[in-house]
Image (cartoon, rainbow, N blue to C red):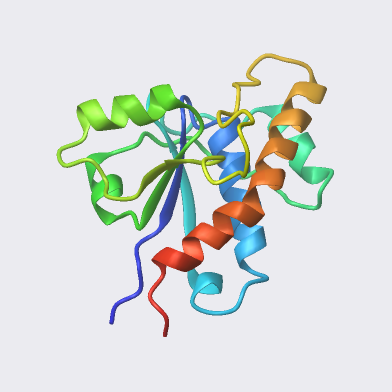
Length: 161
């Protein structure tokens, strides 16, 4: 059985939320048993300018939790990425809707990053772009908070080895 494709985190420009989400999820998966530990996480944007550097506040927010994001460069979400993805995780419903409209076919596993959080709390992660560091840290913390429920769901999707 071949390994599943990558998990793709998606935001708008791929310079704030999705790179942070990908790095945080990759870090969390590294502590999981196989096959989760071997899953690769990449990020992309629905309106990204290829090669644009990650926002400085995203780098700072993740550096505070021991993750270096400084080398990330933006990339646009492509149909090939969607076709190869094991799971696609969006930051907002508008990202998910855009993928549904533009992708042919849309990915089978297309979710919000916070979709599996228990309760009726906010499921979207707001765009911190241009805001102060504390807004980026709040977005980071929303991602961290959602990772346990996200990993629990991924366990139901990954075939046992």
